[in-house]
Length: 224
Image (cartoon, rainbow, N blue to C red; front, top):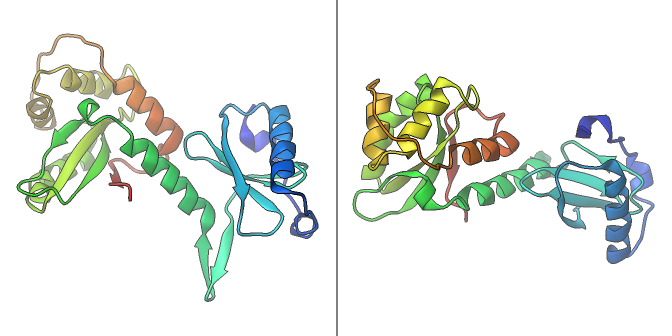
């Protein structure tokens, strides 16, 4: 069942009247969420900055909000005004979740362009060898490396699994020298690589459920 089909908007006035204990609220919210048959399991339930409203983190990066009695579940952005300026609390939490997911990808499953000299930081980039913008970024990688930035490529065949981009990325990941294979593929050269077990489909699935709405290439800095 899709989230957009099952969530009801809550009245802020009603939300402010609930005063249940945290553990009682969590039990009530979890019970209500079970009836919604969410496709993604709940990771945690914590009090939000707004009284009576709880933040529900789903596994991955999605965030929902619920009333303390579990009768209302809200999908959307929660803003907090600080010094007259709106702060998107939902986006902040979701981006942190995405960052942790992406930075949890094993380095061995990425195509690494190491920093020259001291490694000051690293960025993880979802890329596609058929993406023109990805080619433009690739041309800047040597300069990033000189600045002490390690670049880690993760596969995202934008046209889906089974597409030419998917086949090209699998060939890169199945090459003995992935870095050299990536360079050749971006330059429009063909490479020969035997079929092998590779993480392309897994990385595509991760991107699809977390950062698929972002333009390619997508950058994710080292988690702090």
